[in-house]
Image 1 (cartoon, helix red, strand yellow):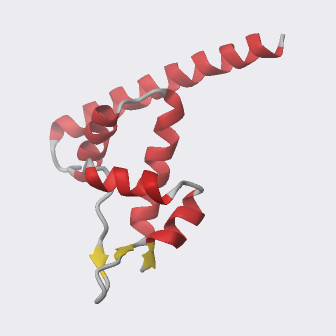
Image 2 (cartoon, one colour):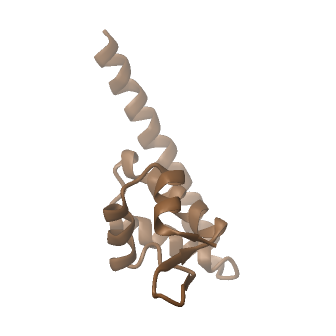
Length: 106
């Protein structure tokens, strides 16, 4: 388990950003210390890194929540379709960003 400071450092995000993701339900701490501090697992870090990857692709917090819900419910038949749709959308958005970077490099 790690505290929020270590999580922030490893994810290269601010404490404020991580707290915001907690407030909106995207990244809920796996536990609390005796003193009430948020505690996170390696799985929480992986979840946070996924959120961080989605941000530059322009996914909204709501869309991120939908993706995470699909990941959290692998037994749901609709989840596989939703995950495939998210993957396709992410690839499309990444290609668009790559074109834009190319234009900026011109």
